[in-house]
Structure formats: structure tokens, C-alpha cells
Amino acid sequence: MLCGTGVLRKMTWNGKIERLRALNHIVESILYARWFNLLKDSLIILTVIVLLLAPIIYITSYVVIDWWEINYNVFSHPIIYSTRWGILWESLLLSFKLAFYATLIDVIIGVPIALVLQSSSMPGRRVLDTLVNIPLATPTSALGFATLIFWGTRAGIGGLLGLTTGVFTLDELIGGDMLGIPPLLLLAHVSFTFPYVVRSVSAVLEGIDPSYAEVAQTLGAKSFTRFRTVMLPLMAPGVFAGSILAFTRSLGETGASIIVAGVFTTAPILVVEWKAELLIAPAALLSAILVSMACVSIFVFRKLMGAAFTRAI
Image (cartoon, rainbow, N blue to C red; front, top):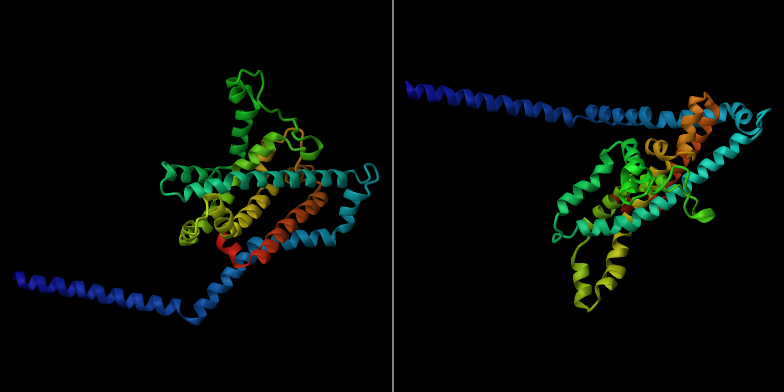
């Protein structure tokens, strides 16, 4: 009786295995079928068109087709004339300066952090690696508000230093005519863009053969010489890729900028303001300019760096 029960269980188990094999065969035949691959590729292309290309094409066509409306509102308004064009240009200039200096600081602090994260002897390396990811997962408006409270009010570091206000104020500029950047905006943008440099450089460092540095050390090269002549050229694609990602991310940031901008207006903030005022034509023009700049920047760097840019991101 027990023997018969065991045989029955074995037959049942074998039957289940055969059914799983048959199901697996059916799934594989579908996955490798020509019609399925064609459907998959079509859906992918359709998704990219609907979610990405269609809005970009539409905003660009809006600028071209309704140029008369843009010309009226931006360049030849009967009352304010070309005032909006001046405002647009000033906001773009501020956004570019902000993105440039934020990216410069990102590289200065991001490259050493990436090098430290690759050192297995670094205590707390995994904790640091996790902390670097926090700005990527945190809403930028929350980071902007945290920056404002910490640096711009007495409730933050200003109170700890015995100041009656924050270290910086919302209407403050640093650097004079040469820099001309609101410090709170700069700090906020650095806080959420430097991880792009860290991650891009780290991705390249993981693919570098350590034997290159070991050979240089064997030949008598000092540590800085090894870094300058061996490591720096090898991780350059990661630095460039991270820089362009940080630059474009800063150029298009809105959430944190609104919180800490104060009296200043970046290009993305101006888009929001014009949309709220129902100035659709000026907002469309500025949006098209920002989208075009981001696309051109990425394509240019991809062309210059080739496959190295793709690996770095």
C-alpha cells in the first residue's frame, strides 16, 4: 500500500514537471517568435514617442506655427514692448551661471567621494554610499526647504553660530559681477546634483583594471603622479558624463529653486510663473529653448565621448 502511494506521488510529481516543461516550451516559443519581437519593438518605440518625442515635437511646432503670438507677447507688445524677452534672457543667464558653478563644485567634491567609495579600506563606506543616494530619491522641494531652514534662518546653523539671521539671505548674491549667484540657490543645486558625478565616476572606476596603477607604482611613480597620468585619463569619461548630467539637471530644476530663489528667477521658475499668468506663448518659447539646450548638450557629449559616455551613465 505504501509502495503504491509512493509510486502515485512520483507519477503526480513527474506529471507536474512535464506540464511545467510544456508551459516553458510554449513561453519560449512565444518569446522567440518573430511577431512577438516585432510587437515588443513597436510598443517600445510607441512608448518613447508618446511619453518623450510627442511633447517635445508639439512644443517646438507650437513655437513655429504660433510665432505671431510669441512675437506679440515677447518682442513687440504694444505696452511693455520687448520687456519679456529681457526677462527671459536674464533668467536663462542666471540658470546657466547657476548650472555651471554647481557643476564645477560637483566635480570638485564628487570625484574624491567616488574615489573614496572605491576604497575597500574606507570605514563606513557602505553608509557613505547610501547617503550619496539620498538626494536622488528625495523630492528636490524638500531638499530646497531643508537648505533654506539650515542656511537661511536663525533656526539652522545661523542660531548655532550666534547670528540673528541665517548665514545667507534669500536676496543675497555672492561673487559680485563675476559670479553673481544666490548662495542658497547654489547650495540647493549642489546638494541634488553632485550624486550624478559620484555615480558616473564610480561606474567608470569599477571597470578600470587596478593593474594599471600597480604597474605605474612598480615603475616608481608617486601617488599623485599615478592619479594624474593613469587614473585621471581613464576616469575622464565618467567625469564628463557626470558633469553634463549634473549641468542639465541643474538647468531644469524647479522644485528646490522655487523654495530658495527669493527675489531671483531662473528659467524653469519663469516657465511656471508665465504658465500661471496664462502667458502660454512666452512659456512655450522658453520651454522649447530649455528642451533644445538639454538635448544638444547630451548629444554633443555623447558624440565627443562615444561609448565611454554610455558606460558612464
